[in-house]
Length: 230
Image (cartoon, rainbow, N blue to C red; front, side, top):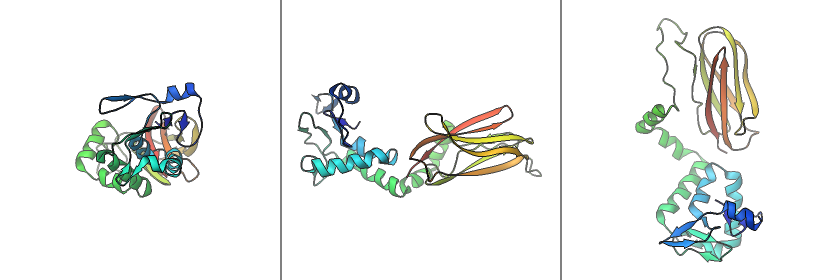
């Protein structure tokens, strides 16, 4: 997404062959632009997911290509540095996500408001992102089944809480892994009593990105995913 005419917008020069692999086809008004073009909105709207890449890219675009890229309405829709081609379009529907995702990166308010919508909550539950708790005996605090809940908040910065339930006394292990499957933290590794439990992960020393956490208790194994957004 960030490759343009043999140059990473963050400033790293690539070979011509690598540029071909990283570039893509950009079509504007049925006019086909060669590989190596970059869409401004998609690149900059990714700030909430990959700020360590997007922020240097944005600075480079602003500092080195502002006269060609910036207009009074925002960034041009697409460009190709290798061809010295700068799209004449500035599309409002593309400018909007840039502002929204910058605010999401700064405060998370857009995400929080989005997650309050009942239709969104129902959709996520159907997709399996939220846990439907089992029916419990009102006179007992012991859950009906082993359960690993979605962490909250998610995305988070820098801490998040993971809740889970244990039915029988047993060795319980809760670990966090990065996107490559490498273990980065052990939150629980002990025998726990039946009932609800929770663990907090402070990710202050970790980079933004997607992580997974896995609960192991006897033969029960379950994994969920979470997003650290700094």
